[in-house]
Amino acid sequence: MVKKKTASPGKKIVLIGAGNVATHLGMALKKSGQEILQVYSRSKKSASDLANSLNAAYTCDLKQLDKHADIYVIAIKDDALVEIAKQIRFKSIVVHTSGSVEMTALKGCTSHYGVFYPLQSFSKARKIKLKNVPICIEASDKQTEKELIRLAEKISNRVIKIDSEKRQAIHLAAVFACNFSNHMYAIAEDILKTNQLPFQILQPLIKETAAKVEKNSPFKMQTGPAIRGDRNVMIKHINNLSEKKTSQAIYKLLSESIRENKN
Amino acid sequence: MVKKKTASPGKKIVLIGAGNVATHLGMALKKSGQEILQVYSRSKKSASDLANSLNAAYTCDLKQLDKHADIYVIAIKDDALVEIAKQIRFKSIVVHTSGSVEMTALKGCTSHYGVFYPLQSFSKARKIKLKNVPICIEASDKQTEKELIRLAEKISNRVIKIDSEKRQAIHLAAVFACNFSNHMYAIAEDILKTNQLPFQILQPLIKETAAKVEKNSPFKMQTGPAIRGDRNVMIKHINNLSEKKTSQAIYKLLSESIRENKN
Image (cartoon, rainbow over all chains, first blue to last red; front, side, top):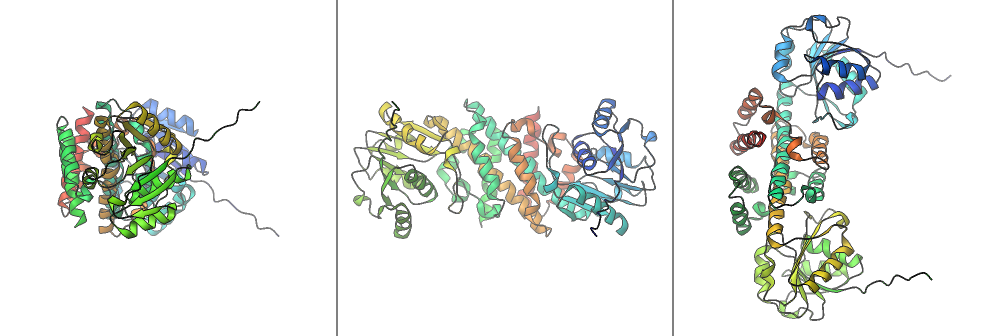
């Protein structure tokens, strides 16, 4: 006799927030068989747009939040998160998706709370395969942890338990690896633009630089004039940046930092 | 009648240098049908290793350089390049592969000189498809330019004419986009290590950050606490870096720079 697979029933979810994280998470959760009951946003347009694509209800009033969800997912900016957490109270699970807010910010909302933090940078315009994105889970109690891990595993292959302190370290590291490396690209774009050159010329280099650290330590992969100690090139570069004082200061500081790391 | 393709005869090439650039270029040139006559390096081991894999002769003595090459490719560190350029004299074409040395550094070597600069970061351990790598060409005269473009097009689909000034701007931009973004990864690695977390966790984020700017301006793709003006998160991060003073200074300076760019 062939054993029938019994699919675990979908969870009922309310999304609080309709930005990039809420959108990507909502889509992935729905696709994985969960039911999105409702979307909340202060902006009616944002709430209704996302609700429509998730076949959900929407509201702009916290008092109108659906009381029958299994899980409430708060995916909004950190400041607003803390404010909203003060205003809601449920019996079921409440989680937030922030990298830097402590789990205990949700203490007043429910007795079953946690964190559901997808380690990725989301933009509305780009599709992301959540399957490869690490989801960091933290929970107030074992049962909640089990529920959150089960839910996360429906959308990602890389679910990890991470406490608030370690999550904040990950978030800080992500600022360097993502936000700051993007800013390095932006400065490069600015330099090229000043010289009537297309940013596109750097594509293969950027791709290779990112690909190199897939299997190697970036510390060991460092190249360039600073690690070689090539003073002549560095002086030339610093002079070339004389019209861009902030970028010049960045060039000096990062070159020093690379030298320090070498020692 | 079907027109027969007549393959242009391979060029005879001498490689001066046996490092990463010489190795990758040498391999690609040989594969494209050129003949590598000889490899020069100060180090006998480096010279003979590369020569063996290219089926070429080798020497450690500049006076023994083969006089019958069509093109001499100097692919060594900038300082050594200028020194070696003073010591050689040929009738055929001499080029260097540097991003930052002026073409005229080769003036004394020959009356046909130029630059053959592949815009990529090469490591011995990684294979690179040169086909997609931009090769920046500059030449002392039209005939040399034609020859160099023809040669470059045998190994790359992205051959561009770039004068010394613009090439230096590209090289400077590349330091930001490649060397400095790698250093951002290295600082992230350091933060994670301090918290007993694996660098690997950031892979999807790093990949996505690089992929985002393939078709978008990095200036417009900026995310994170600095561009949002999220003071609370930034203060927390700066405090978390109190044991890593240089990284803390970098955090502050880059956040300011991101804010400046916004205005």
